[in-house]
Image (cartoon, rainbow, N blue to C red):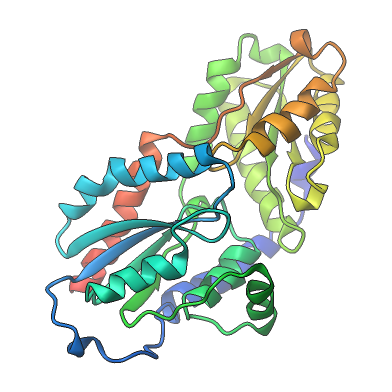
Amino acid sequence: MNNNEQRNQTARPQVLALLLALLFLGGCSENKNPPLSETKSDNDIGILLLNHGSRSERWRQNLLDLERNVTDRLLAIEGIDGVRTAFMEHATPSIADALESFDREGYRHIVVIPVFLTIGTHMFDDIPTIIGMKDNPESIEHLKLEGIERYTPQAETHLAPSLDFSDLLKHNTLRRTNALSENPEQEGLVLVGYGSTRFDDQWSELFDEVGSYVCRETGIPDYTTAWCGHIAHYSPDSTTAAINRALETSRQAIVIPLLVSHSEQFQIEIIGGGVSAVENHRERVRYKPDAILPDPKLEEWVIETAGTYARNIEQ
């Protein structure tokens, strides 16, 4: 059995429960601006698709394509009158700009759908702080240093959970693994993600769930994980080490990047660099520098999530 499966299984549920309490019990921003009644508008619910952002134009375009692909279906849901995309940093429009635009147009509710893999500092502290749901001093100072503007909307704001609250990641990873796999019994699976220092247990448990599922469905004997973000100092070494672990018991390694979108820094320089450092990697490693997006099932997840919030708001 993979060593990752031996990890404590209780920490992540506890933190996720706390996050859910934040989202659903206290998940409405306090109106600190003039009341909406001063703005005459028939606009009811705005949907904000939110992502971390990247300096990569391809990363940004994938998220804008997601918005384009779901907009008509979202606007067909009763109560939803607008859809926007925003980025926490490194890309425009910013979260504050998007929220302010909804306010200018007189929306009564904003449903924020974070296109994030799982819980992390951004989901737990930064985003709730940016949109006025939380006043975390450490996060406020960090946002100031990064030049990220906070904005508390006049509209009542609802923050939805991240992608790991669905089975989407399992099915997405399975599809991409099947596309690369040729002889599953002789292969090892390597999952590479950004990672989190503070929420390492939760990230590891998520990757354990995805890896175990894909191995069961494909017949690949085992999996291992690697990180490519700040927890790994943006170094390819973690990817190389994970591939070499997989090759200790397998003839080939299948490498799947569990990143929302595509960035030249991550998929090419870091993960691709880690692959290239493996001896005889052309024969021993199968890797496609792709991402979770695009995925029709992710589009369905957005629509289902927005529809659930819209129905609850309209009741």
